[in-house]
Image 1 (cartoon, rainbow, N blue to C red):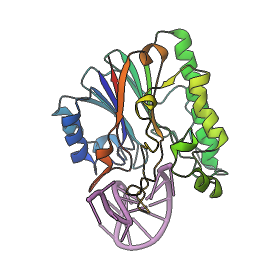
Image 2 (image 1 turned 45 degrees about the horizontal axis):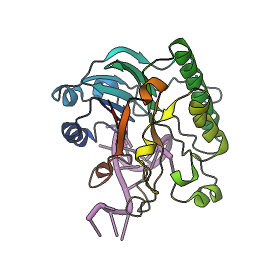
Image 3 (image 1 turned 90 degrees about the vertical axis):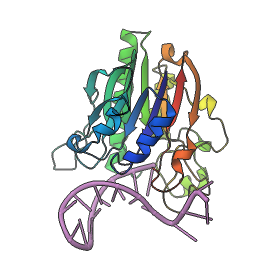
Length: 268
DNA sequence: ATGACTGTTCCGAACAGA
């Protein structure tokens, strides 16, 4: 079985590339982030003609997550229990389309689009940290209920856990950039240290500059100035089944590429 | 060349991405 995660940065703008990629990649489950579409605008037929069922959660042009599967798609869940909403001061809180789950081939898969903190003192940073905390608490609860759970938390985590997960840590520090701060890294590493999850793709993508995202601006991709922020975190029972993983760099190339590449994990 | 941002909204400027 093969599980992939991919922030496509608009499913409508990327429909042809996603279809061609699915057609040649032999993946059983694809978790998608940033579909940027309402459910009514989602191109379901693209997936259906390749034999995939799709569950999508999209409210407007922002965020949007989906799971496509050809090994079953059961017990679909939109948002996790207690998932924080974002509220501007004096305005109603908005529950954003950032999490969707389904059971596919015996694996509970969550497609996750972790909020961007935007700035170190921006209200979105507190929102991001709380969002990760509640998700981690859920994870601990799920694993306490079933230590043998086949659980995959995959997606765009918007955290670079190690200094060499960005092209120049000094640049990030000097410019007070997000993704690399201690609180963000602590919130992420808690999934491993406290919940017992494993970043299963990392051991197979150990290149010194193996990234999953490159900004569209400033020639970041040609210069390989990227960031490693897309991860697949597996529960113990699922992690021990992993036999390989790869970053599909081809998908960051050429006209009409997303700014993220697909992360593919092999399970026996 | 892997190449100098991109996508959505609703028509052109604002917002978001990270």
